[in-house]
Length: 263
Image (cartoon, rainbow, N blue to C red; front, side, top):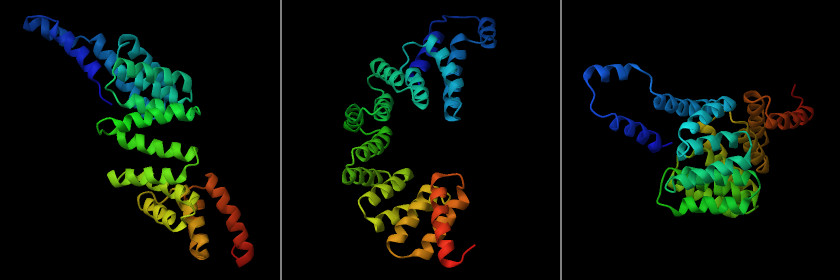
């Protein structure tokens, strides 16, 4: 995330310090700056958020926000923390605040769309994702298109979801999670061959993923490649034994054991 407000605040302090003697500058350099401390709170808050330590992140970010109430980046980060807590109402408020503070900052628009989608406000979410895509191309474009594809899925518009994901992958082939998602969408469209290709492609990057392994097995069953399907069911159980997919795979393998004499 960009930090122009925080950086600008620090620069302003430095420029307003006036002419100091070498001794005064040396003394000042040894003393902790309140502004620098709060900048650290913001950065530490982001780090904690990435580590999943959400409650600690919220404390840090609230401290930063107390000093930087006009920082769009801090408001956006705090909104993300509340989004992780599934506090959709307050996260939407913070993202809206961030957008008001810096209309040129794209991230909170996309984030507000995610919060609205998770809250079930699909129309509001659609407006935000399309607003990001209507802007000059940025790193957030890929995220907004992926989120729009998820939204199309929630609207049961599977062909539209497939189209969004295919467009995304044409623009950014390294957006790996879109490959798995497109596989799931193609299963809804009963394009099992296309879905299998996506799952196998995804498994080259993450061979242990239970969703891709299990659904690859289901696709193989539709083409009567039962022995190979069994292998992917076994991989699902082996790599992610506690997953929901592993539970379903065990039920399948239990039936297979009865039919084939497998232990």
